[in-house]
Length: 188
Image (cartoon, rainbow, N blue to C red; front, side, top):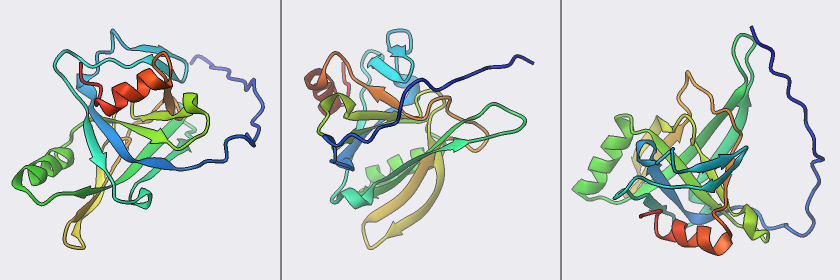
């Protein structure tokens, strides 16, 4: 079996100039199969160009309060397999229409997703994090409809798989270009 030797090569230093923490009140969900992997440019943990196939778009999930979105990523260490990461997003979905329920059913039925979250940060180049890029995120658990209008659903890395990267950082040319694409849901 091949040995993969990895070494760290950078200090982890607290950035006193970036004390803004949290995520904005919306995320974008992409169907993983809608990503044009041939046109998307990846370099290490950085996505330099995130491209969807022609005619495809992302889907916005908006929140009333920042606290309604929980995102975690944690290492998954294994003695008999490769090490990796598990991503987990707890979504609070709003909407009571038949179409809203159909979308929830599609999520629960196994949609493979990629999520993009915009960080609150004073360093604009560090604004957009991508979860599930290599493996995809799937529904892992849920609470159903609560409080008369909110459906809690958790999407995460499938139980038998791991993402090779902790989080991918998306910056397409500069902040303004990336923010424009995010706001336009990456539609081509």
